[in-house]
Amino acid sequence: MVCPDCETNLVEELPPEAQSEFVDRVTVLETTNHSVMLMAKSLLEDAGIDCFTQGTGTFDQFYSGPTAYNPIVGALKIQVPAEAEEEALQILAEIEEEEIVDPSEDDT
Image (tube, rainbow, N blue to C red):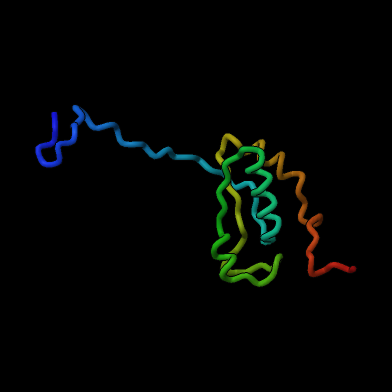
């Protein structure tokens, strides 16, 4: 069959619409330290774990220091698919906020 208006070949049946897949996500990190959040996200992505961040856009708008808590923003969060929670927590266990060096506090 051909379209009478544009002479394009027609198909017998339209392909099925893509179904959006619901992904159950769990929070694996909450922090007010933007540097920690970025490092954690990088480690998870390097391990092939799909991650989603919450609060980063708002954090950037109301930024008041690398570790300052902002009551408007609250904590930054990283969420991963539920099936990747255990692996993500193992990766993130290696990060301790105390190990993050704030460049503004450099003694040299």
